[in-house]
Image (tube, rainbow, N blue to C red):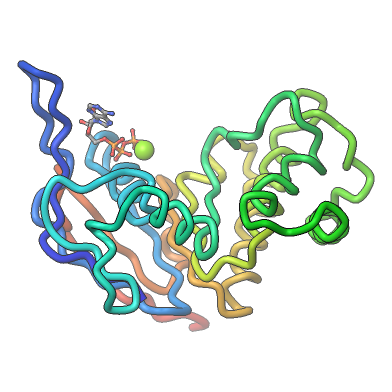
Length: 228
Ligand SMILES: Nc1ncnc2c1ncn2[C@@H]1O[C@H](COP(=O)(O)OP(=O)(O)OP(=O)(O)O)[C@@H](O)[C@H]1O
Ligand SMILES: [Mg+2]
């Protein structure tokens, strides 16, 4: 599905330059469930931003279904991102002035879906994540776990092929984190590709593949046997 070839990312702050990714080669296949682990500052979020086409690369190639998207114009990259990818962040990243329903509807408006269809789809998704009774709540009126479930519903609104989750349970108590994990696993069982950053070794072991990154470079990449 995705192939990164010799990807590097340099944050150039004038006098200070940070080599956040160095010559990363990585293939992600359709249907995989990948955990990305590594110390703080090792480049995990940078890698997620690159995978999600949220940030540009400093060098190398990004192939999506064998098609090099590295040099596409921003607008085209945004279209691909909106159509194929769903994002879940540690800090939920909901729009504070929008209700749960409106937050979930938003990505669909960029995709040109009618108001009526956006609304009914958003309602359906919120019901799926167990928030049918919180549709008109603002993020500040919801618990962390509820906000993250809204974020999951939102990430699913355009039927993504790939979900990128950067420490999705990082700000949640463990029982609420577990609910999020189960949701991601269910999605993966339905065929959605999931890439998740986690600091939690147990969560890492529940993925099918575990990649660890150190100092901007891939350090290990292992398949995990499940169901033993
Ligand atoms: N926008 C930026 N400008 C400059 N440097 C940055 C920027 N974003 C990240 N960095 C630097 O790049 C390196 C990798 O950061 P990144 O956020 O990818 O780490 P991480 O592995 O996600 O860490 P954490 O586990 O703490 O979230 C760090 O040294 C960080 O300081
Ligand atoms: Mg990070």
